[in-house]
Image (cartoon, rainbow, N blue to C red; front, side):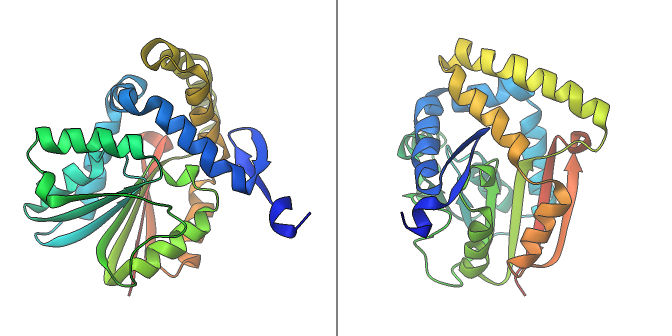
Length: 250
């Protein structure tokens, strides 16, 4: 057995070989693609929209910027970015083609297709040249990457000098009692919602578990800095249920 074959990672609370995780994640999002946006509204009672607006407020998109939206799925962040910027271009990259298909439908419905590209690809091995983008975003996606540090390293590589990284992800609530209440909701309600709305209990069970396996705010901040980003900071949202991490390539 080679060293690579022996490497393991987590898939929710399961331990799997590293080379298996991407395929499993792809299976999850292929299963939920058609109901993904609906489930986001139901699970968060619409609060994910407030978090994404907070992301845009801090990001402050400018006209003409080139965005790379990794794990961009159905394009929710890219649509927001383009509307705020007024003019620009977004490339949505995702491992799961069926998520991109749903996004293309939205783009056509909103007559924004000319401002968007849709690319199937891996966050750890981006198919773009160095110094290609002004902004890199990843929203509720980096916890699904097999090796998140490699994704951050790739983000640094493809950003131009002066470029901005912005990560929106579920995180840890600093108050133990609040975290316990949130865990009770997450583990007991969200998978059942997934079964009722998307017909898929197991995928939403994984998504809840993956949140608990993600590093806390300070640990992830250290990873952002390790990738080379300067002026790295974070802001908690809704008491830490979600968190924004920001960094600059200088």
